[in-house]
Structures are given as C-alpha cells and as structure tokens.
Amino acid sequence: MKRLFMFLPLLVALGVGVFLFAGLGKDPTKLESALIGKPVPEFSLPSLKNPEQTLDTSVFKGQVSLLNVWAEWCPSCWEEHEYLMHLANDKGVRIVGLNYKDTREAAFRFLNSLGNPYETIIFDSEGSLGFDLGVYGAPETYVIDAEGVVRFRHVGVVNQKVWEEGLLPVINQAKGES
Amino acid sequence: MRYIVVILASVIWLSSPAQAEVRAVYDFETRAQELRFQELIAELRCPKCQNQNIADSNAPISEDMREQVYRMMKNGASNEEIVDALVSRFGEFIKYKPPVDKRTILLWAFPAIAVIGGFLLVAGVVWRSRRRDEEGSGLSEADKSRAERILSGEEDQSERL
Image (cartoon, rainbow over all chains, first blue to last red; front, side):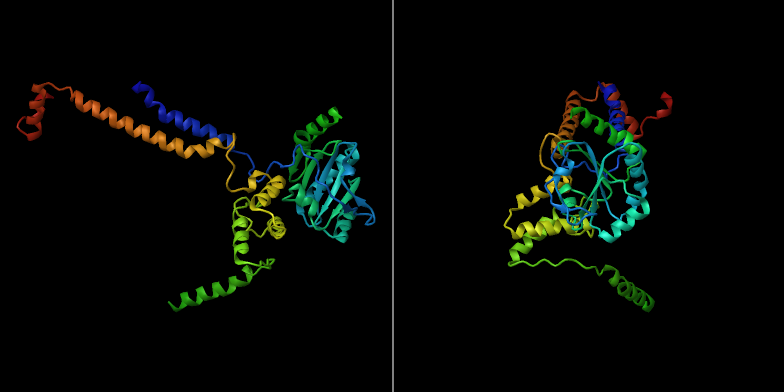
C-alpha cells in the first residue's frame, strides 16, 4: 500500500501532463458558432450589386451554399480570396457573400482587383445580419444546407486545409441528406 | 529628481492623446439604469478579444454588443433576456459565469472536491500519526535507555561502528 502511494506524485504529474498536452495547439480564439443546427437568422438586406433588390433567407433555400463574410478593410479577406475564386471556378461551389460593415465603393474596389467568386452578395453595411450570425471577426465562412440551416462555421482564412478538413466533409454530408 | 518629474510629466502628457478614443455615449433616465447597464456590460465577455469584458474592449464587436444591450434595455428587456439574446448569437463563451450543466459541473465542483480531498489527506496523516503514538516507537526498554545515554553523551557511539 505504501509503495503505491510513492507512485502517486508520478501519476498526478502524468495526469496533468496529458491534460495540458491535449490543450496544446488548440486555438482559443476559434469559437464554435452558437447557430449550428439553427436556421440563418431572418434578414432583409439589399444586394450589393443591385441596391433595388432585397435579399432574404430564401437565397439559401434549395441548395447547399457557403456563406462568406468579408469586407474590403479586412486584410485576411484579401488573403483568402484567391482560394475562394478557386472554389467557385474550379470546384463549382456556390458561395454567397456577406459584405460586412463596408461601403459599396470599397467593396467594388475589392472585387474589381481580385475577382468575384460570389453568386450573390448581401450588402450589410450596418453589420446587422453579421451581428445576428455572431460574426466576431471577418473573414468567417459558414456552410448552409439546402434548408437554410447553419451546419458549420470557420473563423479565419479559408485555405486548402480548411476546405478539405472542415468545409468539404460538412458540405458532402449536407448534400447527401438533401 | 527634477529629471524624473519632467520625464513622468511628459509620459503622462504624451500618452493622453493615445487614450482619447471616441466612444458612444449612452443616456439613461435614472442612475439605477445606468448602473444596471454598467453591470451588464462588465459581465459579458468580448468574443474577439477573449479576456476583456465588453465594457473595457474597444473592438467593433464589443461596441455593437454594448449598443444591443442599450437598445434592449431601452425596450424594457430584463437582464436575463439581454444575456440570452447575446448568448444565442455568440455562444456561452461570452458569459463570464458559465451555467452549471453537464459540461461545466467538474469546473464548478472542483473547489469543493479540492477542499474535501485536502481535508481527507490531513485527517489521514493525523490519524496515522496518532495510531503510531499509541503503538509506541517499537524500541525495547534496553534500546531506549541506551538511546538516552547516547543523546546525553555518556556512551561513545563509535564503539558500535
């Protein structure tokens, strides 16, 4: 019995070690969305390209889409844009853009210099839909299923790794169900 | 000494413009409402900056959240409704006090577990030492008297070695 007690500090140290090791490499700035499994919040906002046109949650109905939150002022959005172009043009992914707290002028400047991967762009100059979605740092990318339900959120730049390990499996699953 | 005063004064003077930021001013009808607002924004965490509450944070998202808290207060929402509205958008993360549920029970129970564990440990040590006293040291009378002689210096220890 006494012998066993001698090993107690070692066991405690091992336990703490395993616990701390599991925390290594986790990014505490990435939060899971509170909206997973819930429908996209109701909104009524103009289209970026056509101010006359009003968009609502029906833009997500009928097919699986990516919702990408971007702004001209956001440096990481410039960084990920090339990959979004690749997804839209080469992989045929439907991407809906949410232009967040931007001006039309700045948004067009961004699209003119980098290209437009978006099928539709929601113009949210006040950031109201962004707020309802819980956007806390652009760029953010959501997978929305054909019913308009949020399935996944990625905060930060979308690249090949994020696409293959995060977005694609969820998209395939969502497509399989519909 | 004079140098130090000059340096300190210039540091204070130079740093004030950096802190001057434009913040939205919220008007309240009563002092109690204002205090309630201050209390609410002090216990909500900024999702972008992690370890700041939305009262302290200058992040745009915190500004939006303060705005939302203010708007809901003006519309007569209760504290609970306001917190729930924000949690439904940004998740439990923004509450500095997590709710007690399955995932957080260990977190909440840990202080009690640590205290009880520590108490049991101390009780165990005391109990064992008591038992040892009762049993005695296990030395015979001859050994004891010899030990006393050694301690008082009457017997040379080296003869045993």
